[in-house]
Image 1 (cartoon, rainbow, N blue to C red):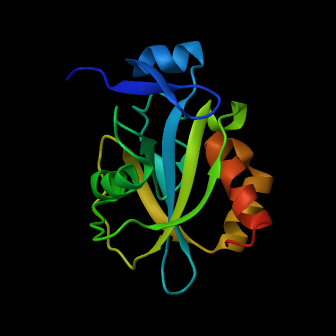
Image 2 (cartoon, rainbow, N blue to C red; image 1 turned 135 degrees about the horizontal axis):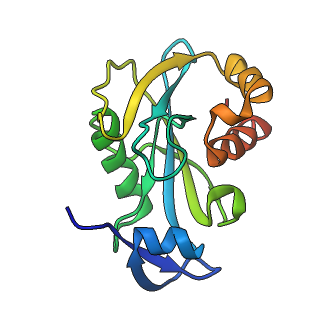
Length: 169
């Protein structure tokens, strides 16, 4: 399988070129990603534990679904694609947009749109992407992050804090 090619963007999130995934991450280039938080009717959030084969943050907990935009793809289309590919959730419409984060160190130099949707599952987890997943009460996640931040991807910790501050949880 050939390496993914990402759009490289400037500080205004405008495409300025393309590079292979490995080079974008190595060079710290700005690029694009999405994170989707899936909640059930009990208000619990579904989190995934990243596979140990992931090139960044292997074996730690992360958003329900997240991923990079393909070259030429828009954020909304990526959110639908990643939900389908990672957890098998088919969406007829784009999840609800919450907010966008500018590229920074905490996001791994990614401009990130954060989305929210509701589903009860069950999900079909992509084994190369996800070791396992589970539902958690938001208050439990907040406490867990405070006690053991190393068990979560850096971008997820940053996003979770913003979600909490903005009253989205």
